[in-house]
Length: 267
Ligand SMILES: NC(=O)c1ccc[n+]([C@@H]2O[C@H](COP(=O)([O-])OP(=O)(O)OC[C@H]3O[C@@H](n4cnc5c(N)ncnc54)[C@H](OP(=O)(O)O)[C@@H]3O)[C@@H](O)[C@H]2O)c1
Image 1 (cartoon, rainbow, N blue to C red):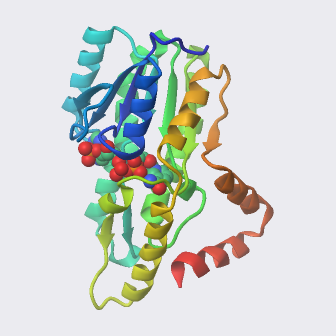
Image 2 (cartoon, rainbow, N blue to C red):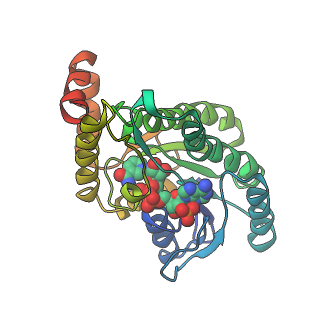
């Protein structure tokens, strides 16, 4: 089923970056959009902006009640809230790894779980924002890559479990995209560490690529297409150059791909 303009769309992580672009795009196209984050957007949004932290169970429950009372329905959930960590595996404190998974994986799961009764009523659509980094394990971003490969796995399992209810689930994988992601990234660079020089070089490459990445609206355009599709694909990569990279990954030997990633991000 594709959705009409009365459809209600919930976007997490909508205070800035990709989530803001996605929420704005749908709102300007006439959909009813609730966009949530821990902070309200800095510029006046066209959507219904609400405060919600994906790591706080009560906050998610409150939003469920709000949507039920205000809109009486939910058609599309876009799980977008997330952030990154850069650091050597050896030097990354377990607490920071937990914090990352709490947002990118557990937060996504919890929001999905709470919203599912509404999505089942409407035979809705769930779009999880994963990443190309979930397919390519990037050195010094391994934990981030792990969260995004988890999102891909979660999408596949959930999609099968929800099939009889008519709820579709898609993993959308952006590559480098212009947003506040670089600024929000937790940088675990230890002075005098044996990893320091490599890590700083790696971060400089990542940040340059993100600065020159695709506009955030490119993710909205993909989501917009998905909302109109009766039978959406399981995984969708954003941007031609990243689709091409993924094709190469399947064609080239794994060791060669590792060597290439090492040359770019690991040396
Ligand atoms: N930019 C890229 O190159 C890129 C590439 C691939 C995938 N992605 C993915 O795209 C998604 C959006 O990232 P972005 O690039 O737009 O980064 P961003 O500009 O830093 O935006 C991240 C959003 O997530 C929200 N957020 C963070 N922690 C949250 C929490 N605990 N509860 C609720 N909201 C929270 C932030 O709002 P508050 O701080 O106000 O809570 C913000 O609105 C992420 O999942 C990211 O992994 C980004």
